[in-house]
Image (tube, rainbow over the protein chains, first blue to last red):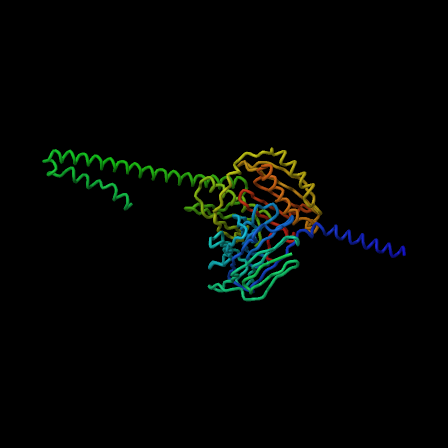
Length: 206
Length: 287
């Protein structure tokens, strides 16, 4: 009986130690919900903000379009983190010269902006927000058009509330824009996607 | 030019004053003289206006070029490796040299790029007419690592020009205490937290941290980054600390850089380098 109690005690202590050790890293993670197109010269979509400020606990969230990388990439969307007065448009990249995240103007709640990453004829990847160019970046190591493009929401804590509408999610062929046409869903628990079709969906959770 | 020619019409005035038929009629002569004076006066005023506009434009162009040259000189004095810098109309272009010998930059490169972009932002907010900022970064062999063309359309919030309500010392002490008390620092040690002002008067918070290695730092790093930025934002919003720039350096026990970061709160810009083994869970990432 004493041996059983001791084993239970050790198991409980072990679980507690594991929980304590993992707690600090567990409240900063990356969870995604959205769709991917296997290749494209660009990606664009209308991304709405929720009707009111979503719960972000001590963390944050974003909804974006991006080249997939995996090493170097260019991205744009909106982000909202703890302490922010509102969601902010941004662009971000990783190049051989390092990372850069540029926050821009506030995107009001229940408001939609069109976000676009597209490749120019010189090979640069350009970011446009509501049609306005914000910048363009080139590196021979940035992905070519054969790489996937993504439209997703991202959370950094499982208690962060996602509630984002993506409409008219499109990829660019050589010249023409087409609706996303593949079911390449990225859905990481506790989040889910309510999809009208492959190019119109809503990210939710938890 | 066509517009200026239409308004002045000096040859026509001279032709009228020499006409024999006009000399025969006194009243007509007076009228003509009066008209001649008026036209002459208008022409004179127009010439003065044109000369003034040309002079002011030239002065502004010289001032703009002078300011740009001063910016380049100051950056070079700070050790920014500028290979070339030009200002053509409203486009500023820089070629910067990384000390890297490979096709990937060094930990200093994003910090260098940020320093130059910040100067362009400040120059534009001083009144220099710059719409685009182009940069190209080459490695030590002269090979291009990356290039960019950025639209400079941001305006500095006037509140940044207001005096801080906290002294540097009180901002430093309170932030240090808050970080040590409230920020997650598992696997990481805060070695120093210093608040000082840059030569341009911007208040800078510099945090130096160390960790055994990337794996140990990752225990808390993502949460730490989100929390620190929130703490600084709160300190600025609630106590008017006016911290415009946050620099964060993390080294491992052997002195190797794991993370080099600069956040420019005045323009919402984060630039950083991180060891490939460091977590990406505090920012947006496609994979």
